[in-house]
Length: 362
Image (cartoon, rainbow, N blue to C red):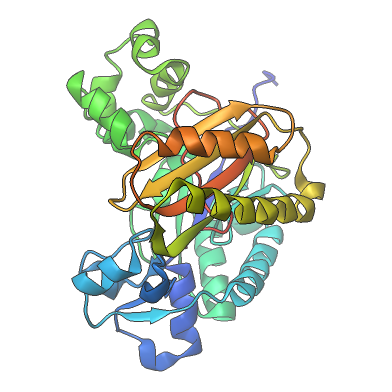
């Protein structure tokens, strides 16, 4: 024995158009039609997820429902039925647990599984992923895609490779050649801003990113630079975490009519604060750290978004009000959305926090 740890076998399972697929399953007459699940256009809602037929028209998650209808006039808009989606997710998670105790749910529709050392399917993670996907279809009549790789980063990239209803595997010997051709936008944490910065540095692929040293990357991206250095080489040592610590909690609302004054925004913020306190009370058992900071997000009528945060160890209405005033003064325009939240732990790297609803997008 040389004492080396066994090579990890990680699977990332991602359900295909989860909310929309469940709605089609519940009503077969919707099959083959462009549908979207989310908020209504009358209440200025957004698309939570949509069918592939709708995506052909340019509809996507987080798009305002009114915009989605302009792109696809025949779009069928359905309300979110969260209790149903949660029940289906629970059933799927139960299937995962039959293969391994090392399951890390990311949302209702996706999870990491560590199959290292598993004896199922002769120890083949590829066959296990195929079997799990087949069992999900047989029990729930829903399709899933899977990525199989030596680590979480690559497994997640691969699960999106042959969507819908497909899977892709990367063996340890294939990692180097695979990541060289990978666009940097596929790296988790690389959004539009980071992608633009990398492009200005002449970097569009991981192979080009590998040419930059850690000091160079850190000079442009802070601590995230070291992470970019590793991921561009297919290195990711994060374990599958079965007890994920909640890092943040937030609530937000989109208004039917823009708030055209600071006073109206403050009034709406006060009501949202009460909702946040309720959510904190509900999630108390899952919170293991005290607050690190408060954060607020404002989206103006023209869809431009600004965020602000302040360090504190407890939620404070007065502090949220101060943050709102400072954020609002950046534009002094009518407001269509307000979000407020609490951060319980510092992020791995410094980047602007984009508040999200606690429920998954799809």
